[in-house]
Amino acid sequence: MSGLDTPEIKAAYEAVRSDKDDTNWLLISYAGNVGDKLALTASGSGGLAEVAGRLDDSQAQYAYVRVEYANDSESKRVKFILVVWIGEGTKVMRKARVSIESGNVKKAFGHHAAIDARDKGDLAEADIVKRLRAAGGADYNGGRG
Image (tube, rainbow, N blue to C red; front, side, top):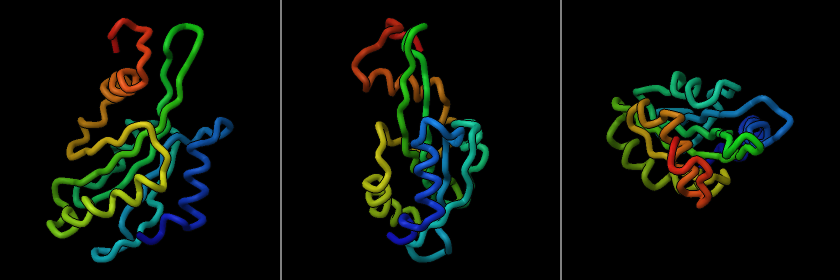
């Protein structure tokens, strides 16, 4: 898979990972209708809601998102998720290739959870935080989201 090592994607990835940068997501898309070349589409600081608004229903895309949530009044957690988006209008051959090609993206972007999304509702922050809490083992909210 080409494009993951471009300076633009690397810089956006480092910005999302950094505690000193407000950037908390990046979005990459396939550069063309055929092939596996990826390009940075956008990045921002508006979290999952902003990412969901940028997803294209006619494409397969990958979003990398920093999610912060409080465990209690004294602490917060930072987790990273990788969203594998396959929009409803994505061409059949692209959908088939994403099942193979997404493995390379997952290897390149260190993450705590991977979310396969087909609908923007799959990216509800409360549901994702609940999933991250469950995966983390310690739930200081007694199972509450």
